[in-house]
Length: 391
Image (cartoon, rainbow, N blue to C red; front, side, top):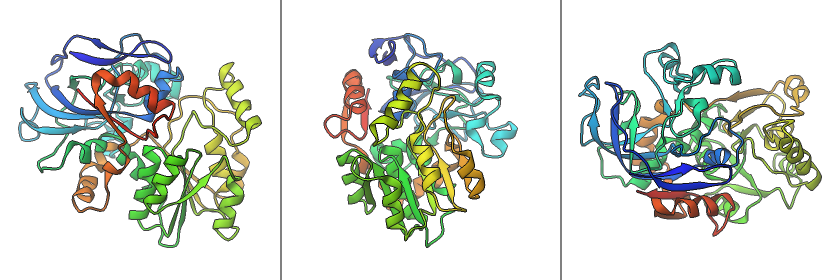
């Protein structure tokens, strides 16, 4: 089969790789009809997530048709011919974490738990196409994929909704929604979102759906800010204004009630010398993550507010403003998304027309064009917001 693979730092390559096979009685094989490039994939390509190996199949946002199931898959939950969206965290459905609906913390799905434990203190769940730190599972930027614990994760789509309407239930829509949900939004709240990429856009839409009075989009790319503004959000360009000062202006001097970091470890900053500081520290491996957005969110949030972090962080960062966090009674909430918890409720919101995931899609191309897709997405060419690949 054809698949998009990691070919070294700053390089992906579409290659012929072996077809996946049933390895466990609870596996399924899915013929992929749509997959996508995620901002988190760039952390792999840019070399900031360790344990990637040449030839690893990438991608953790995919959907398609079940063509084979293992003997242990519950036929009342999944059958050959079902059309499914596959969540990016692999969850067993039976451990203590899964019982608490903390699916991205599953205790049984990561065969390389020892590596993750050394990195994070405790292991995390397996993730499709996201390094050997999270299990070394082949990803979904391919024609076919093996799906472990197939009677737990995949969501059956039984309506005539298009792939584009439901594909992002695999990751970025639940992630954005969880970021907003963790804010405990009240009707009077002003919510500021750092990052107007796909996850940030969905965090903004979710904050509005959950009742926020005002949603502010922070980014530097005009096309992203225009997309957010068309959706009814207030744009702030951090290359043109001081973000904290602008947020104080928009909130009567108090700061946003709730702040969402939808950027993560490769954040940039509007001040050249501040941006250079963290780029240099990252380059010499004095830190792994550039925490500009996180620092700014903590310093900007009103006292007693909530900072919700859904941007991916992988290791260590410098100059975390612990004093501001502690002394101003801020609540910090975070986590890889527990996607399985949100898929059905968000599908219902899509069906009711409350959310339109298709609004962020700017490019659709064949799987064999994945290298070009990564290039325009990473380098923000052609006003690229989200790339959907068709195997």
